[in-house]
Image (tube, rainbow, N blue to C red; front, side, top):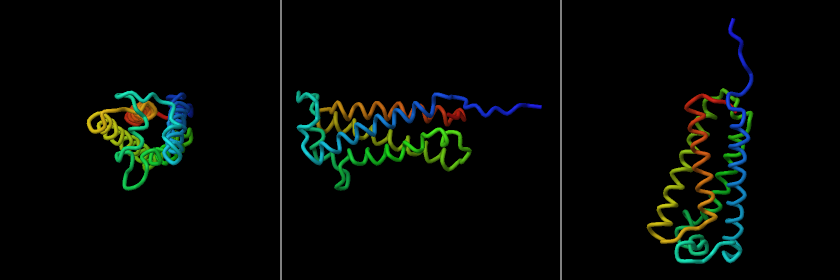
Length: 152
């Protein structure tokens, strides 16, 4: 008789995806506060290539009248519960599909934002780049885990 293990296959998965989502959420909140107060709050150099104020105050920093930073704040607020240990252990197919779809949509949005920074604005925001890197890591982890059927 085969023994069924209740131990997670990747025990580090849920804590790591939660930590990544939490870190990205914190940065997105910081960017949102700076947007609604003053971009001068951003601790970021103002060179030609690295210029957080230029990026976060450009027309591209708004999506249908909503600050992109606020979109990120809401996105990571949704991702956090999707990365809870109970969510990773769940056998609910809709939850797994939602988590993967959200991670994929987030990565596609990041590609759009990076393209806009380089091709349209000619400047990048270090804080935004940190969120982009965290989004990419989250996407890779979720995609690998989903493809392998891993649980956290």
